[in-house]
Length: 150
Image 1: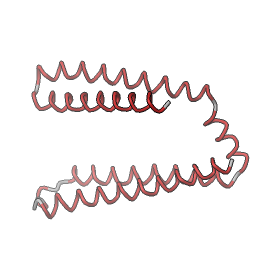
Image 2: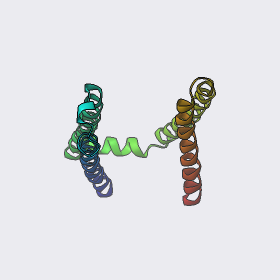
Image 3: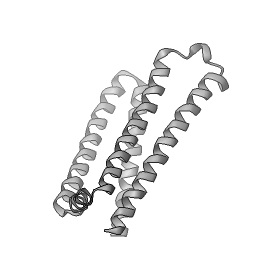
Image 4: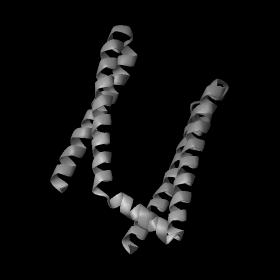
């Protein structure tokens, strides 16, 4: 159980780095747009809303995860329940099948939208095509990695 507690503490640290990294990224994006590219006059409410939404969303989600994990670490019964839930083979199989189905459906939707976008707008088509190729490459690379690891 000590190794599981260490894993949860590691997750808390990772969430802290995630929140800090997202904060730094959003602030750097704002600084680049406003001062480096000299577009302070073009910085409208849409840009600020997107940056603020990304920042607050990442901070809130990280804070909620860290709060939940700290609560679990303090209560031995919750710790045991989470440990059992994460080690349960049925839950792992459901997660694997759900992830595989979601990726395949996402690839299908992207493929269909690329066909439609090719008839409408070249920029949209190229954006969807790059997203599709990136997703396929990630899928193949991770599949190769995990097939060697297991």
